[in-house]
Image 1 (cartoon, rainbow over the protein chains, first blue to last red):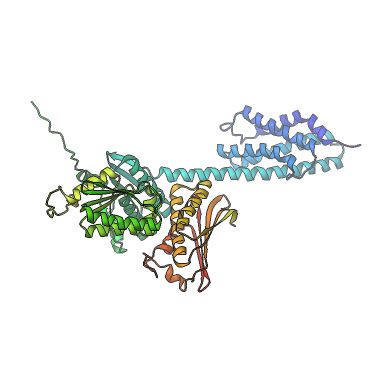
Image 2: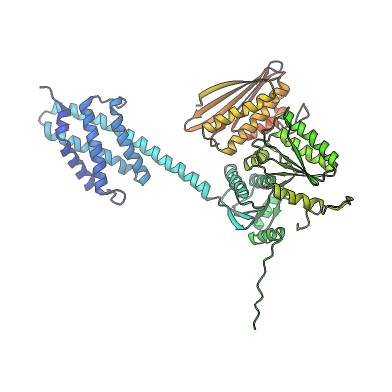
Length: 286
Length: 136
Length: 137
């Protein structure tokens, strides 16, 4: 008697889906905060549909085959979305495992009286589902990596804001360590902003830089020199006493740079250079 | 052979470099400019490089040369409009062009020159340049 | 592992070829979406090496390649001449050293502008310099 698993699965599609949904919804770790039941059902239905259709079409368990690519695509899409939504690997893994459970349960129900065939078919299903699990994790991790890369870029962008403090005066507070990659971004942003605003003075505030060693000092000097080449002046402010001490102890020469202890005094210097005057208004009581 | 035009504006010479420089062109500019400074007794030279996307060590040296040669002929040189990427690249290359004055654009450069050489006088009296008058 | 995705060999014999090559490098750099600053650094480095090749090596060839490593793309340039060669490479790589009358920033400066730099030379046979810049390096 030739047994047709594809037909069986096709007939049992609804059952499998219901079982799977039940498994998923019963799970305590279900993330109702991240995904609604309707969405979950839609995802599940699509996947079951495509999976069953595929087992019917080729019957091959080799996931590298072309006929599997629609299933892998759907699963990949789900895995990537889940990675971005913030699902944990365990939760994503359960999604696929519980499908296997559901299919095996249906098989047990339908052909449980023929142990040999049940074993044969279960093994086939196992092989397919294990392959799909691996694909899911690969895609999931790739999705996570993309999130990390994007965040790295964002941090780099956010951490170097250029502020226009006055007409012609820019300020750039640097928070955190200044490595060469960061210096590059700082310089690019600062110089572009100088061009865009036509500013002639830039204040680089390093109060948020934990330590200045010779490498950081070199990066600061580079930034100042590049600003000068553009035709603007760069003042370094926010130099704490301990930084002044280390700089001198390390024998770093900052004499070519205008340095101020605070952003306020740098601003005052900038006002003087631009011949601006800030005065307290005299209130006349009459 | 290509030539970069040098414009005379009162006491100043204005050079706007619109093409990508190669070595011979830059060398010609150096020679022409020094000739012009001498011939016109210009007091200032303004070089606008806002359209130049590449300045390597050779062209950097030419710019430095022009500044030093003009200085000997009693003219100040201001380089204006350097692009951010060019400025950063020159610094990485190790060429901060220390002897050269800079400004953001032609207008600022003109102002800078005027401040440096002081009010124009017919008989060219020596006036001490006071470009660091507001420094601390 | 660095894979080469496209290759293009350009002859450099005259000074005017420099502008041509610069444009070619710019083209491939734009193709792999290299940022403006990195483009400028790469072309400036290429400019330095080209000058060396014309001045000391009587011209030569430049191999322009688009390369990839994992998710990174980059431009690799290989300058080869059949000139007299460099006897003392460490000395040539030092800032401010020049046998001509230049600033001596060519080789060390070019090295600072790119991500990877390699120089091989044999006296009497010629010099090969390879530089590589990653699109986001």
